[in-house]
Length: 103
Image (cartoon, rainbow, N blue to C red):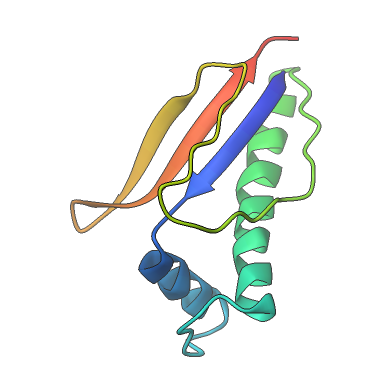
């Protein structure tokens, strides 16, 4: 398979997740350490995904995460994406955008 996965979240949720990944250390802005924690979240998600697919005989080559920040950003892929919302207390907390094709 070939494509990209984008993990999107608000600044507030990014700070919250980074704080939890750093054992409760308060995070009020995304600095180098908190960004690294979020990148590790991406590595964990994609590493587990690649492992699951490999048991089905589908190989996925994952690449290092890319962090992009900003409001009202528009990313365009040649592959149509599927949005998978991840909920927390019935509110969207993190969105996964999956853009893949069979190679």
